[in-house]
Amino acid sequence: MCMEEITQDTVNTFLDDLRESGKTNMFEAGQYIQDKFGITKYEANRFLIKWMETFAERHDHSTERNEHLYTDNNVVEDWKD
Image (cartoon, rainbow, N blue to C red; front, side, top):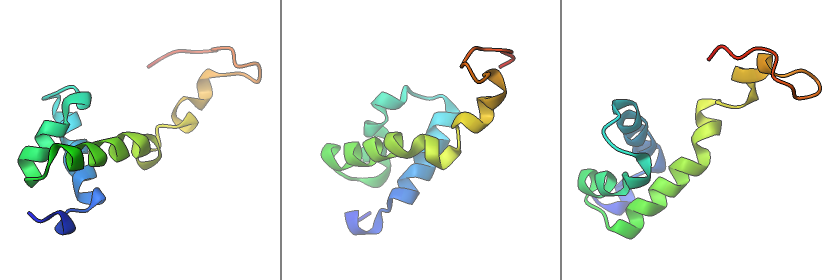
């Protein structure tokens, strides 16, 4: 696959699936990207870094999920996860 054909969204989907599979520590996922898309280590790591930087916003793992855990004083009220 040519680098111009590979989008961040495509790689993000691949990495999300890889993460869910539990096959590897995601810090080592660059090799999986290289193998899947036939790109260089440098290119793969650029995609991986962007995936990591945007993970929370793409998956909305922000405060909304754990909002019930904190009071106004940031003290844990209830921990059920």
